[in-house]
Structure formats: structure tokens, C-alpha cells
Image 1: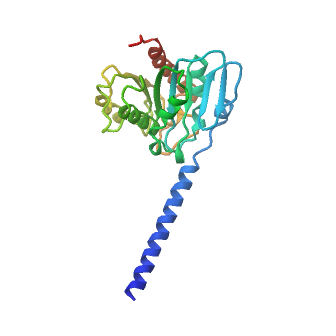
Image 2: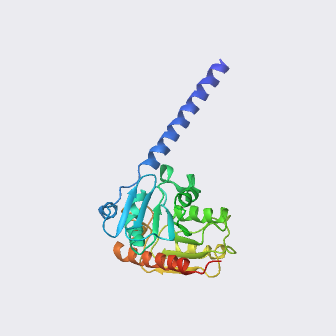
Image 3: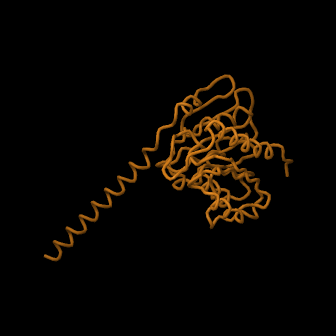
Length: 252
């Protein structure tokens, strides 16, 4: 009898684990749909060529960029939601690559940047970056692969406490919104000791968490005090400034 009951209990526990795992997969695989502006930005034109395959790649149509940005999406955010910003980056002469993640969670593939860099050997200087969880995993990549990237772009994000980049030879920009309900001002402030002393801190007055992408509102966030287009323009400007600094730095 004891063995029979034990078998039943183990079967119930096994079924519960399978159901939980299945629910997690469904949850991760069904992020909010990208907004129409994001889908429109995926079309190639005379300025920017867009390729959608393993990655979403934005390339200037009339030049071969020597500097590139590898971008990790936020947790449970469709990678296409960042297309307008990456398109704007490419329009200024840079390669921009969005890396879709397994189950839309960058924590499951933090080393993806290495494969992107290997695929584009003509790009001599790289920055990695990301939004929220994606930014934290980009910081982790920079920490675990020293001297492979020259820049780090954090959108409403910060490194994990274990990833101390304070002495890393990196150019870093941390861009955050004053109305962010997730990557709050307190969390951003607490990340300062983990980043290089010359990190550039860009505060977007009225910006929130969800407007770092084009995927609609997000649970736990605050209502923004500025338009999504205004916030995106400031994000792109700060990102481009870092890429320009990397691209114009003297070779060592």
C-alpha cells in the first residue's frame, strides 16, 4: 500500500511539474504584440536594409559600418518592439542587431553577442546593450567577455551585483526614465558603484519603462509624462552619442 501511495504522489508531483513547465513556456512565448510603428520599421528602404532571420539586422544601405550595436530585448518583450530605435541607429551609419531570445528571456542566452560578432568580422568596434533584463544580460556579457566590446548601452537597466564593471575599459551610457515603475530611480542610483566612473547618466524626464520599446503598457509601470515618440528620440540620441564615441576613438 505504501508503495502504491508513493507512486501516486510521485505521479501527481510529476504531472504538476510538467504543467508548470508548460505554463512557463506558454507565458514566455506569448509576449505582447509589437505596435504598428514597430512592424513598419521592419521594412527595408533606400536608407536602411532590414534582414529578419536568426537575428533582426539593420544595415545602412549605402555604407559598410565599422561600428555595431548588439541589442538584447527586455524580458518577455517581442524583439521586434525595438525595431524603430535600431532602424534609427542604422540610418546614422551603424550596424544594429536585435537578438531574439529563447522564450523572450535574455537570461537564457546571455552569450548570444559572441555569435553576432563572429558573423560580422568587418565590424571592428562593438557595443552591447539592452532594455531591462536584456540590459542586465548585456552587462553580464561585457563582464564575462572582457575586452571584446568597447561599449555598454543600458536602457532602464543595471548590472547584477555580481557583475562589477567599475574598472572595465568600457564606455557606458545608462538611460532611464523618471517615471519608470520597474527600473526605479533608486535602483539606477544603486548601480553607480558597479559601472565605470565616467559612465554617462541620461535621465529622461517623464519617461517610463514601457516606452523604451513599442509594445504597449506594462504591468507595474507608471504612466509616462511624455509621448513615446519623444522618449524614443531621447533614447536614440543618447545611444548614438555612445556609438559615435566608440567609432571615433583612436585604435590602441
